[in-house]
Image 1 (cartoon, rainbow, N blue to C red):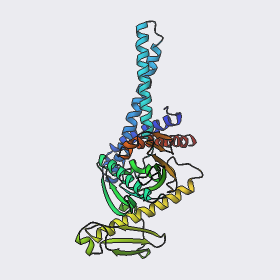
Image 2 (tube, rainbow, N blue to C red):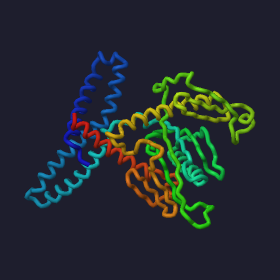
Image 3 (tube, one colour):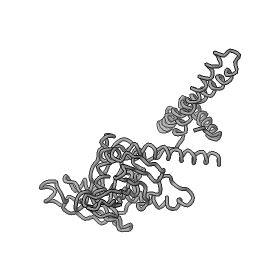
Image 4 (tube, one colour):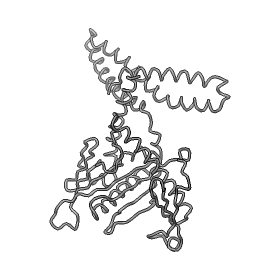
Length: 367
């Protein structure tokens, strides 16, 4: 990629700002103001990688100009060396510009958050439930590779395996940044084991990835708007689960949103987890409403998050996975369903960054 003139101007402005911040940090009066000093220190740290890369870019441009001037030297040996240097410098510039473009993209404030991962069987009956189980194992294996922790909050098993619904909490470094493009409808095409004629069936599941919110961003939920029900947890868990009403169901009356959480250890923990999940659902609902309002003026690369939107198809007979948002088709279904999601997440992230960079450049040009 090539940085536009407006982005170069932006980088120069940021370099000036870093010098200004450095001067303020050296000021004795600022040093006595803890809050201001801390804020300026954070700003300086955020600017440092951008400006360091910008300085490398300027030096590479200067070196390239010198190399190009030597390409017309009278000495043939010097001309050949200059051409080699220029070719290497152009490659270096391409890398530096791509890196700078990424650094200039505003960070998603949710990227480092843990998530609630929800998978629900859609059309397709038993086969959809089995596919929901496949998706859960795919994400669980990917989480294991990333050294994340997966905690099952609630599940409704399918009659012949898999899940009608499974809700989990995924905890670890940069979870939302890696999984945020997974929300939407996932479609599977394969021959069920019970299909005697060998016909391919199509089923679907929906996946929702909601960033977990911290105390600072909690919604002010009126307790009077919540109905709390307790019941005995189902499934394995021993005598404690079977004999006590440890499971918790919360109903948010104004929105009709219902969340459940089951844990064999305590009702208190279940209630806290359910409240956190309810909060994430309400924030997600508000975010979806905002996205719906903006959809006519700006198309999001990863869609609106609407559960009815088909984002990906897994075709087992052809060992093919297609992500419809970016037109990517890979014949690596076995690897992907086994947890090698980076084959998809990498290209999705790159396309999203390219779109954000385009929007950023447009914003600078308008400004």
